[in-house]
Image 1 (cartoon, rainbow, N blue to C red):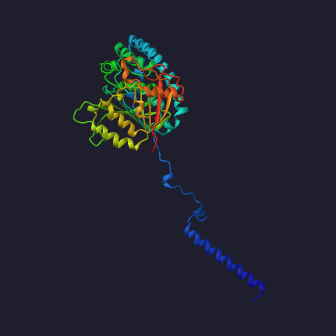
Image 2 (image 1 turned 90 degrees about the vertical axis):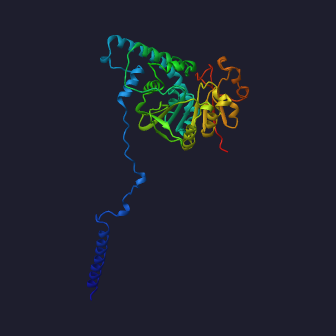
Image 3 (image 1 turned 60 degrees about the vertical axis):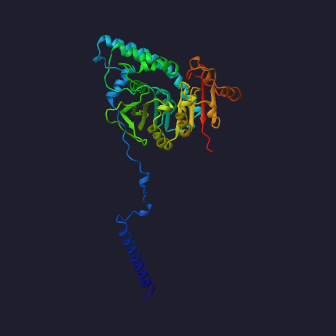
Length: 388
């Protein structure tokens, strides 16, 4: 065989081998021109789920905005009713403006000094709160849960808008001190939130939510079973636990939940079912307890159960001097703010804390440029649990 014929033969054999390999690969990859190793495979765990925006209850929020003095349907009001609502709107708006100045300062301080707590906290526990919604939502705006508790009844959330002067007067009088001084007057709360106009805490919470532009999704009443789980109310029992689900327009897919429990937290009235709820629920969360204008109740030996529960389950406690006495927090990492002074005479001499005053006189105390709680100038204490 000549050299030329040999070369031609080798070339033909090489082409045959290359075509055979191509055919084999084509069987493995039907598309033929894309190697499967170059395709980006996205694991199911990394695929973003489709999240729908939450939907508000329009009727409930419309009513809340009416009592908040934000908006009304003038076509459904008489001229006299519209004039009364407009006057009320102006008064409540002025009070909200005063409160907003304080809340902005509190927000700034939280961002500067306690931003880590704000980021960690997903559960705000707020005993002795009354209907105070504005402060916890300002201090911890992105928490998943807010648990408020007080003596006052839950009340109802409905869609009835009463444009009578007595309603506007009751809302204004019941919120006047709170919006100017940051706390509710304990002695007047029974009358303020147990009337025909305001039958409990929920009407006030809903209108305060409107002022924060929070959108209510739903509201219902619950019970606490013996094992601590939350269940629907049955048997026509008087509701003592309310749940409000809501969202904020800035995060329209983040559902947040507020609970309000009407209960006496005195040791003799402390329910085992509530304790079971705390024992099973709080360990699952990063809990910050907030205490303000708490009437110095946990200074007394017969409020030890709620005090012990707070200290057991909280990663931090943010309070004024009316909350848990400083003597119980000496093993915590404590930061002081503002000015400590003698409590109001209304609460007696026994609530004055010599050890707290000594700490204020010897420690490096940080500035507090707003009123929070009973005294003015005010004090604030942030206690962080030390992991041992």
